Length: 507
Ligand code: SAH
Image 1 (tube, rainbow, N blue to C red):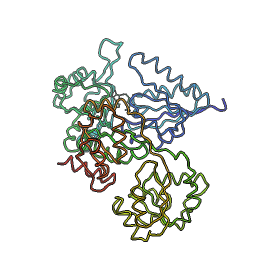
Image 2 (spheres, helix red, strand yellow):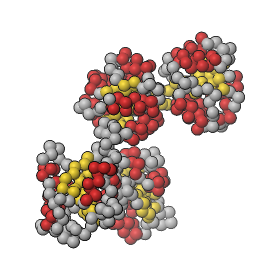
Image 3 (tube, protein in one colour):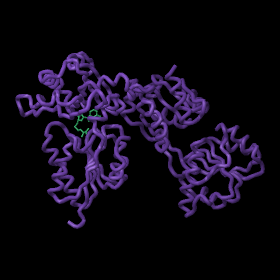
């Protein structure tokens, strides 16, 4: 067994994909195979290389034991085959995660392993509900307890007589189904009916939900709800729960509970999704457009080969920058190829992506409208000069035309293709039909066109959403397609769009 692999038992955290550890992501990056549970956000899986195999072993509660044995066997088998295995588990692997059993199995099989702790839901769900599990002057101890009853036993298997009053804060995992029994036991063993209680389900997720009460009334409160309050949930018992009133921070942000559809190409969706999530929204990314390399890179290669003949290169998008640098790379060249050529970047994101590649743009127009750009370049003496315009395959000739009018000799070359995405996720379509999406964002005309075409006969569902546009050109396209735009950004950037959305919500 000289080439035996290794198993990493990795805690993926409670839900919010930002709560995995750096070490956990490093293990994922090195994985040949990822064996993951239910309640793992798909975004965590994307840390693993595309070639890595992903095996879902989400447990059904029936046949529990057998499944665990199968998982253990799988880990051993893969490691013996020489693979690097990441066993990705919710929360912390050793907090009611059966990670200890997996580690024992690995030890017995002589397989090297490492355990990467995770942020446990026992603490994080409370934290995201604004409840510190300990607090100076309120509670100095914390007990984490399973609320799961052994179904084979007739009498209650929860032995809370010692625990009920032993710690100031009690956190129960796997306990919502047993809430009445749990509460009964705590009261019977001396905890006051006035003790504050919080139930937090889907802690740290966009659908987090919290119900508070006291030991005396929480069972009735829950029974009176229309919607059942199901797992995954933690039960927090203790005086610290009262701090939520003052310390609530997560589920009271401006866009909390709002589902926002982002129609952008995959590579650019991240920024907007991040900003929206920061404000409490649940961003849903629909890749309405996909970016692809040009069909024929010949003309771009050719232009880059003669780059010194140009006075200006005008980059209109991040994708254009990426496309040009991909070809330079393919030619064995780098940013120095642009030495001596003046560079114009349209939009701050385009400028930033040039700076990342070591190019400080000579000109970044204040406004990104065609005529502003052309006028700015005219002021800089573009007349009579040769200009290279790397662009996508479908945009209009607007900018080229305006530069031409300003007296420049413009060469347009295709640096990337913008393709319509082929289909929309059926789940997203369903949510739109059900009116479950509050806001739809458009960051370019092509995102409007593509979403409308993706929806096909369902396009009328967009009438049920508030539509936010990045600027007048995008808005015009939306109007042409019969959509009503309620929000338009003043500054035509992703942060500008964010600001417009927040202002709209505040009104
Ligand atoms: N190892 C995990 C716990 C696994 S047991 C951890 O450290 O978090 C599964 C139980 O964890 C669920 O029944 C529920 O009580 C709790 N749980 C897991 N994720 C949760 C979440 N996001 N919000 C609330 N409770 C959660």
